[in-house]
Amino acid sequence: MDPALRDQLLDRRGRLQTAISQSVQTESLHHLPREVDLALEKSDNGTYGLCETCHDSIERDRLMVDPLIRNCIDHLSATEQRALERDLDLAYEVQNNLLPKKQLSVQGWSTAYHYEAAGPVSGDYCDLLIPQNGDGSLYFFLGDVSGKGVAASILMAHLHAIFRSLISANLPINQLVAQANRLFCEGTMSTHFATLVCGRATRSGEVEISNAGHCLPFLIRDNKVKTLPSTGIPLGMFCAGEYPSERVTMEPGDSLFLYSDGLTEAQDRSETQYGEERAAVLLTKNNHLSPQELIRASVEDVKQFLSGARKADDLTMMVVRRVG
Ligand SMILES: [Zn+2]
Image 1 (cartoon, rainbow, N blue to C red):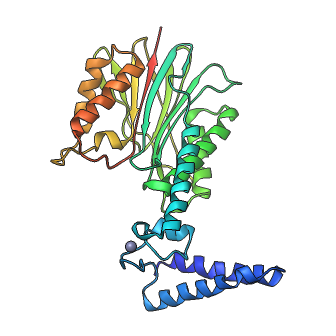
Image 2 (image 1 turned 60 degrees about the horizontal axis):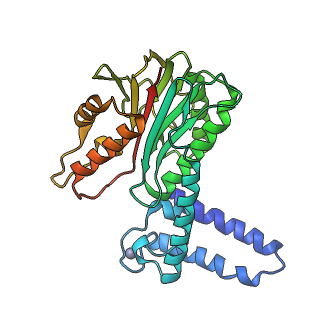
Image 3 (image 1 turned 135 degrees about the vertical axis):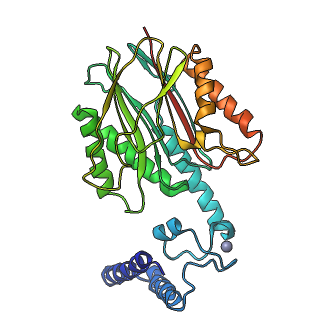
């Protein structure tokens, strides 16, 4: 048994005992220590974490949240299933509200994005911000939290909150990402990390950009595509990580294209990947389009490529266009 899960159980047993000894209404609590003991017994005989219906492993992230669950996600009781559906609807709602305004623009820049979860919620992170107390600069973020589903979406929300609260400190990009990394490291399970591109676009066309191990963004200029290099390791790996930034000057008509690996690693039925090459060709051919049309063309092209094959990963794309 995973020692972290066993610790979870022992910790809960301790807390329950304290709660029961302090509570005046203990009747409703009494079955819980018994359930914890049952789980510990199962851990001794090697059946802990196995679904009571199909005997396959129960999803680890669900056990971390509730170590007493007894069934895998496919074998929930009808009541559990309804509760899960309600939770997911709410999570979807919450996540949707975290997304930035569609087609946000500011003097010198216009943007568009596409955000699509493979399941009910996404582990991708997408944000656009123009700080109110700032100099009119536009901040853009696109990232991917390791794993999928609810656990990843919670970490995505965590990342969103970290950057939103740090942004008012008006830090240079390298310090902003380093600071966010420290906070993310301190508040996150060591098994999780996030890749991310974060940039600041100023009115004069200068872009400062830092890439923490994420897919390389494309710079589209004069019908040519160039990838911008990665400068750092993913967030959440080492608290003291450094995140150097690069500077690019963009001219009117130039576009930055950011995406998650749900784009390039999308697979058709023959398991061929969509790939960077196909994305680059599409982008150079269509950079005359408006940012939202360019995004629409990309979404359409992925759909054509998949031709009905199942989407396996969250997909996010963003265009940041310099306008005259
Ligand atoms: Zn099962």
